[in-house]
Image (cartoon, rainbow, N blue to C red; front, side):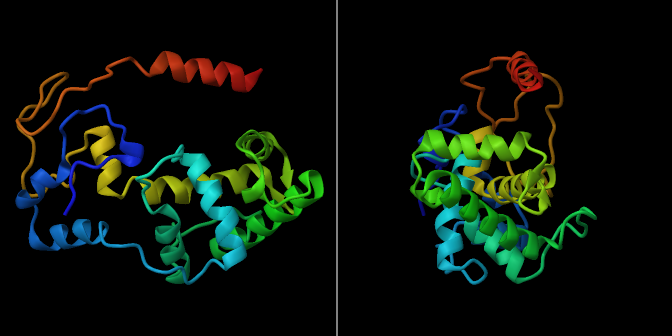
Length: 215
């Protein structure tokens, strides 16, 4: 089994491999985590047309422009088939499964009307512009654009950060039970942890993005 993989082959914690800690997990935890590395299943919820747009949409939202990619659409597809939602939805939105179908249909119609092509066939600049119009807009078809964006991001991020490759990217050691932690404090690493290879403070960048968004 290949280990130490990060999405797009990029990571800030050189040599870190969360699977090196698999021996510290109990059998139930190990089974759950390792199952996430199995070959992704065939889609059961998304249609072929929906998949074409949704796969590109999710890769753009998560910056997954190169292989290897975390199989995000497959996890979202599983959740929607099994009705595994977050247990709530905004009153202005239909239940999550219906909201995904409606939002993807609106995405397809709006791109064909405005650009003469479906979302997945647009160049990346145009695709990014479409997504920005959803993020900053008021309505997206019959749905509130804000809550469509929230739906897409909630599912995308949950699917991405449940995967061990994403854990490698951020230096996360996986489930702490029953191993636990002993070196608590800033810059105090556990023996299995690796130092951040790019330890820039992210706060100024986040503030810069927020200022630009407000303008």
